Amino acid sequence: MLKINNITMRFGGVVAVNNFTAEINKNEIIGLIGPNGAGKTTVFNMVTGVYKPTEGDIIFSPSEGESHSVVDLRPDQIAKIGICRTFQNIRLFKQLSVMDNVFIGNHLRLKSSLLSSVFRLPNYAKEEKEIYEKSKYLLEKVGLYEERNEKAHSLPYGKQRRLEIARALATDPTLLLLDEPAAGMNPQETQELMEFIKKIKDEFNLTIFLIEHHMEVVMGICDRIYVLDHGAHIADGSPKDIQNNPKVIEAYLGVD
Image 1 (cartoon, rainbow, N blue to C red):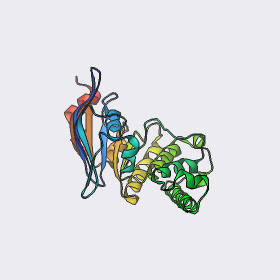
Image 2 (cartoon, rainbow, N blue to C red):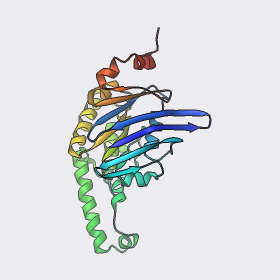
Image 3 (cartoon, rainbow, N blue to C red):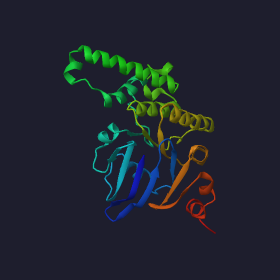
Image 4 (cartoon, helix red, strand yellow):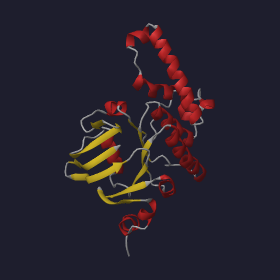
């Protein structure tokens, strides 16, 4: 589904990511790990159009016979072809309601014109009803429908994470990127998140690419893992392979 081919990202004389290559297959959960400053979020920013790679290419193939290079696309164009993400620091519309946050995610697929929305024409009214039903469905799936009228900022941290994921699901992605979804969670919330990610992967037929420092999450749900250190790809493989890889152990713990 996603081929990352030898991407490099330079900021002046600093090489944030150096010649990184990865492949993600349909319906996999793939982890991207590494020490702080390894270049993980920079990879996500290149995949989602925040940065254009200095070198290399990124090919997205959401279905058989369909293929896109994303390196020259804007973030909104990338979202429209089926790649959506969450962020390390939660970026909800905090003063809006839980329902309104999911409504906004749906607008990427809105077909009605501005004129039809202003004058409340029948086609817009029909589409608005469909968006409400879809938003209700998503909130029920993530366990937030009872809080639909609450302000987003009033939710506990774990529920804010779920709301951010629900808003991303409203864009109808086929590839979902999660940037440190377990950050700031307690052990119970972390366990619930692991079950939640596996559940939405199956229910929404998703492929998931995630960055995570919480090793219990990475080792517990990922099919395969890529490891970065100082912008360089140092290892990839199954969770068991990564746990026992001396280069990974050295990157995280150093050597005697």
